[in-house]
Length: 230
Length: 225
Image (cartoon, rainbow over all chains, first blue to last red):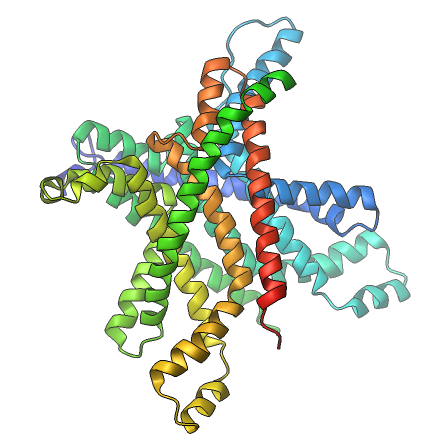
């Protein structure tokens, strides 16, 4: 227990900050994922074949390759690409992209693919009559989307989005390979310097369990709140 | 993009893919056994057995696979008792550690899939078997189990693909699977795009084959209601 004390002697404060980092990366990744989903869901539902193929390629490829591969590709590839772009503008030398940004972006791309599938399913489960009724009433397409489809879509997708959130939260542990100090990385450092991996990885497991448990409680509350009228 | 490099590293990556498939097949095999045992424990009416099985699946589904892998690879080696026992032969090998971690992980997910399949079996089937005087054991093996297996095929197919992606973590504990080979190429040539995109294509190809096998099985043996 002494190992977990706050201050210079223990790893308590470091692990606490690392937990906050995990939460921050997860939320950032989830938000980036939403952006991707909002772009790709209409593409997947589009009646145009070419747009459809783009949407399907995104979800199929991302869900078919390992998460680690996406992270490595962005981490190693991103640095090279940034240096290439910089060299065009006359800046030579090594550029390192922030680990937080690459990590959040990589996990965001992955969680976006899952969110896209969730949103697509939710929109497809909205009754067709609502689209027709709003059309008959002469409601414009974008107002129809923002005022009628979007609110229902969000409500319908809460249960599945909670799964996506859990996956995203667990995927952030993979960013540790790029050196971002979140729970996994901090436990790795602590385990290395105290030579007690069993203890620190158990602590990491407990921290992750706590995060998943608490977020489940929170999401359940949200679900009850938004299902009140039904 | 250097197509020549991509072709030249292809054989190396394929040899890594063989390791990946080995890891996948053995962990799916052990995972299925573990999953089946825990699914049966989950539908047991005894609350202690029930809670134990729930705790198992809660732990392995609530923590990242990487934590589980590190706990087994680095953590178990820390226990003096284990280090002196004959288990050490298994635990000191990263390959076996990976298989243990993956099996336990996929076992937890498989138990959830099978449990929900068991619970959706109509009560009428079991009652009909009872009234015909079929013993409990035969009811389980001949009626409940086949229906549950058929019903869980689509979800199990997803689990196989998730596990295929999970095996890439083996590269973190020094196993030269497909991901490990790709990392090696990246380190040696400083060409991340070529290395990881080629690996990605092989992963996608394996995913595609698994997907189609499951689709075929579903069509052939799928549960029609």
